[in-house]
Image (cartoon, rainbow, N blue to C red):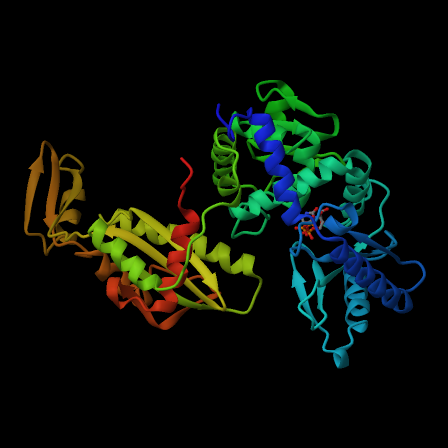
Length: 472
Ligand code: CTP
């Protein structure tokens, strides 16, 4: 296995890691500024918070696992567990909103992950702060809201990861970001920050993670607390796979009833497995940094592809409601799958399909072979099935001809749709197809090949490039 020039694979990765760290570890100046900003917000919060509410920093800033220029300050307001959950949320949000100084150009947005929080921006393009209300708990048995475990995660990471390993978390996060598999959000369904920390703890180092994923076999069930890989065939393994309905389980060391990897898709696991093999084969900056592509003249790029492949590209355009990105993305996934099935059922199986969203605009696109369906053969019942045959012929009055295939009647009919265009252009009028609630068809809805305008082509090209595997 040749890595670098004349060096063994270990040396190659080690010197590469040192180079990477020089560009992704926050500078001293950046850390000083983040600390100053965190302290300044905490001071403001202290003045606005009742004494029984504790204020703590959490997330990657509190753990020293943040990547240069790409993190938020997470500040948790910890309320007594005895309080009602809705009241705790409402009070926490009210406190967070109160500290925002609009006269200084500061602003806030209420965000919803599994739980509401306030994102404060400071009008200076520098690090923003997420202020999150939660319950103060001693251990997971006391959990009252989705984010209560976070301070326990802080404790676990700070107790169990040394400085070198925290740097390895940064390297792993940057590697996954470069290849678009970092983050648990619906669009990515990749590895969250906390899962990266647990992977480094479990496998010891970045190299350990890369080695493990290069040999990955599913199911994989890991009890991170004691670094124990549970045999998936054992009674415990089978029970855990069933409990979490997943073949990729990393039990939270602070809460044995939570799978930290619950939102990681099979595709993300497979992508990291491929990437790991590539890193072991060639540990260089190019493999680490991932593909670079430009989205200028996306329309030309898409049309060149369409012509070279001799296919048709159909693109549907929507405006989306102003709601959480995850909800819009999930609706796009469902609708794309439903349309893909409908196309396939009518003889126009998509070769590939894509979706993307940005600035309130969404697209779904299908790559389909050019084809026309002249007639379809529809199979009816057996003549020995009483009146069923008459019902069938009654329902196929427009049939070109009826035949017998052994004992069954078959009909050569005009197809419902002769081509994919007929099916897709009729969607808005088709009562059997419901367009998801938060997707509003754009006034110009369907575009084929050269009709696709640059702005939609950009979204499609981005989706195409990000889905493509280039490191095989
Ligand atoms: N968290 C969690 N489950 C989630 C999201 C977040 O348990 N689905 C907790 C984790 O403890 C996480 C913390 O909330 O570390 C903060 O989450 P986030 O700000 O999303 O990520 P960071 O870990 O801070 O990583 P990054 O460096 O990307 O900011």
